[in-house]
Image (cartoon, rainbow, N blue to C red; front, side, top):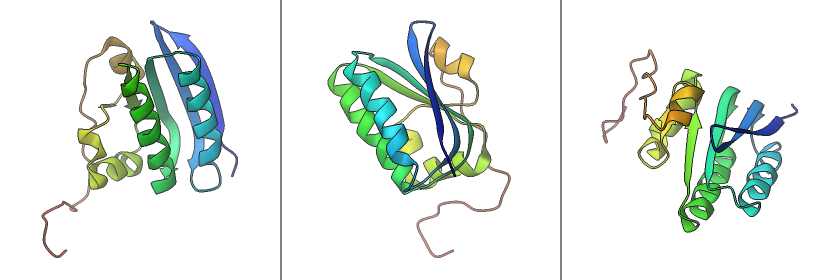
Length: 130
């Protein structure tokens, strides 16, 4: 599947809008867009994943790499996510504690942390056997 990545300026931040599936095959496209954005000196970056219905560990590693580079420049990286299955990946890996997640783009642009609703399932991280 192809990944569509676009960037635009909005409310003083660079919004990187992503649509499609972010996996081992498409993650390099996202990586290139984020790297170019950071190289251009953007320090307020919002990655809009509302058009993404699948994100694997390769996609997460791209976001972590971008977060590290942006923090080195004293900037911020926020993520907008609406699909439960994508938000769940952040929660299960603990990255929701490191990367601010927002349910809507407006929340990310206003700097208000809006907790992404928990998935409607019975799974939880308990530290023991499932």
